[in-house]
Amino acid sequence: QRRAAERLLGRAPRGGGSLSVRLDTVDAVLRRSGVSPDGLAAAVVALTGPVPLRAETRDREERAWEEAYTPLDALDAELTPWTERIRGDGLVRRLVRTPEAAGPLVAAAVRVLRALPVSPPTSRATFAARNLSGAHALDEGTPLATLVLSGLRSLTGFPDGAGARWRREAWASAGLLMDDLSSTVLILNLRGIPPLDWMADAGEPTVLTLRSLTRHTPVAPVPTTGTVHVCENPAVLSAAADAFGPACPPLVCLQGQPSAAALTLLRGLAAQGAGLLYHGDFDWGGVRIAAGLGRSVPWRPWRYTAAHYRAATARAAEAPDLTGPPAATPWDPALAVALAECGVRVEEEAVLDDLLADLGRGAC
Image 1 (cartoon, rainbow, N blue to C red):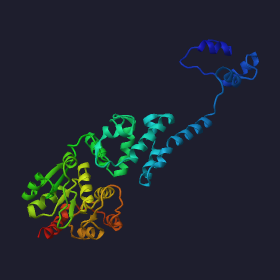
Image 2 (tube, rainbow, N blue to C red):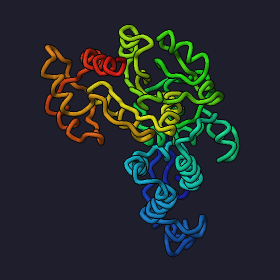
Image 3 (cartoon, helix red, strand yellow):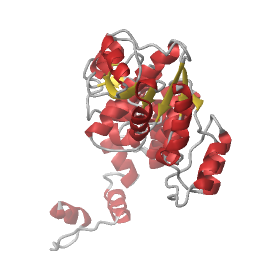
Image 4 (cartoon, rainbow, N blue to C red):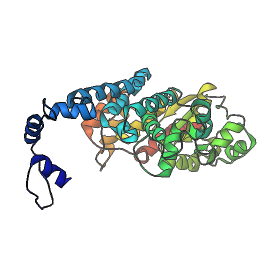
């Protein structure tokens, strides 16, 4: 290449690790020699064909990307923040690189998200076989699984995290399961099948698997009150079992973000007419859990309003500071305002006496 350039330009041979050629010099040589009377630009077009302008290429590519994102417009308004983020954060571009590949990927992700959440829950492979190109379309590590997981977290409000267990629970929050045994829910004094009746007679907490909830007769709401209390932390359920035993009103514990088993149980109870009363931690994570639960099942607050929060902070001697980004509290918008103003978190254990007093009145 060096020798060819030197012969073209009439330069003496040189050494060195680099070679510089001025394009105007090449243009002059081509014109003067008669090889290309119209110069270098005409020679390039004759040899390689038309050369598109970078600006035109860039504009054409951006239009192609916008077209690839068009299927996102079919999603419900609750996913608008996610679709706007996807258009701007480059996730799709990192997954598939070209707009030609992005179009089918986005369309498949939209098809999945429009079918979520799944109720009753089903295996991820079965869902993929019914709705996509095959049972392995949503396997771990595929571009489609990555994009859908991002979207369903926005759909269900599942918190940030990492690791195989976190991914399994994130999928389960939308009803897509790796299996029907790893998803569980902690309960006290719910009845409906003989093993639950036996545990309720003993007043002891028990764990239900998703398998038991989907393969047996659903548990029924208590006929006398039709109300089921729901808490976030196991300490509440354990204390209630200690205090009231078999007399305690039915209680369900989410143990944080609701599992597929918890959602299946609560949906079944609500469908049978049970009223769900919910209490959780007074912090941004807690209200996100509550808001996410509200998108899946109807519930009413159980000592979980701005008034209850302000009363609890007034009694708390030392409460830790709130952390994390704020979140909305649609069941009581004043609660989000109070959290921001007071700036402290109140865990369920700090108001345990109040919660037990309510359960005790139901136990009488």
